[in-house]
Image 1 (tube, rainbow, N blue to C red):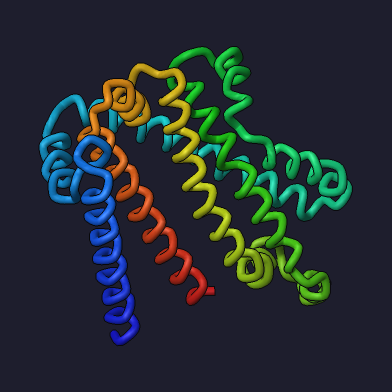
Image 2: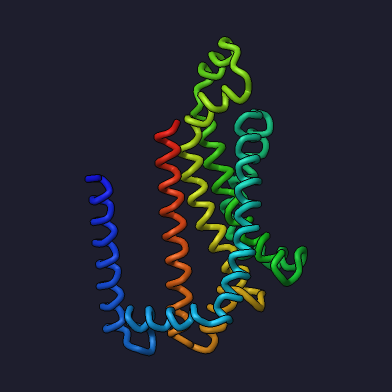
Length: 248
């Protein structure tokens, strides 16, 4: 109970600091550059009551959900494969590191040529951002599994599921969950960037349109929605991470 109260107090303090800094920046920059917190909250309330918002929100969530599923599936599979198959790890890990270091924006024209305009390009671009951190964190986590424990599991005649549950999962879970949280954020960023560059729907398209029209209210509101979404999802993933660590 004390820990929960402490976390709640920290969240309240953090929210208050953000609010004060935001209000200070608004007073400094003026109404043409920023909107006050109250103005943004009021406009966001009106915005989410429109059909236009939910159409764009649904488009973004669909693309993001597909991109995240691909990023998690491919990232975990790639990480486990490279981690447990030493020859493949030695050959492909440098390539994965090189791909992770490339700014994905420079690859977007290629994505458009392959996938064309539409949701497929956004999904591919989002997945490209999420796969490397998930794969690399899983690969690094597997490296923490002590070989002696795997040999012990064979001596004790553990089957694959018992070895996975008692040895592999507890060892790789903390770092793997960190990679999943990072991958979640980067996949969302990639999806939004894909919508900003070449799309006719989605929150990224809405944000880009607002920037072109210098609609500060809409810019602030869409940014607020994306920030709240990312923070809420990160909090959920962090809670899952803590519960899994207690379980294992």
